[in-house]
Image (tube, rainbow, N blue to C red):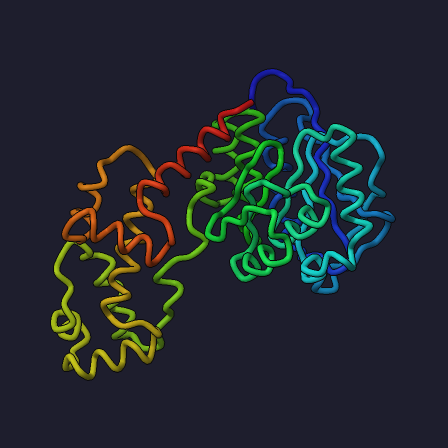
Length: 329
């Protein structure tokens, strides 16, 4: 328990028929656990809807809610769900967001496709925002005034926060908790949730290894070998030896099971590891390029643009901007 009391903050979780239950449960648990780490009642949690009463989630589980009040909340998080991708059907909810914002709510946030509700309310106009990777293109087409960042765990632009799919809502919540009560409380909350202590908002939504998902053990072993030996020259012949196949057989099998050529897979893995190092500190780009197996920084820059769409220097600036945003009180 943290010493001393803390000011109480009303945290509202906005749901609607068809909302995704895990979009609610993850952030709700994070704020509950954080509250238990501090004396007093730092967070008063409210699950709200437009009408109050029972609201059915997309899986059929009903949640009892309070009717959203007219007074300001400290923080309002809007959940996602399939229905929120059609904000014309949820116009009244979007209008409610405008009203809540006008009352002086300190922070407004969305989890996953809840970003569509904020966008329909005009709250994301001219702002950086993200959502689940599957829906980022749709969000950008439908709301061209939003600066959609397609490969982010979460974003913060002023007092508006948005996050990617399900687990990213926990990352966003931990960042808010850190802003409110410091890194120790946020870290203790992450430990209780058994999750990483706040992945940075700029971290990729994707994992190259998880994305490829081969069927056979021999190709999985090759991917593991790639990941563990990125600094080496990973030729097709060398990888074929690991798989105990001829280079021709290996190339065909690898492409069939992963959808990638071995060379492309190596590049993606190198970019993924390099990106983590680029985001984490001031380590020289030249050193990072050499450590992950790129011959020189220019080759790494070209690979970053192909895979991510941004050069390493831009990724570093975005990560620094995220940290600066989170340091604002």
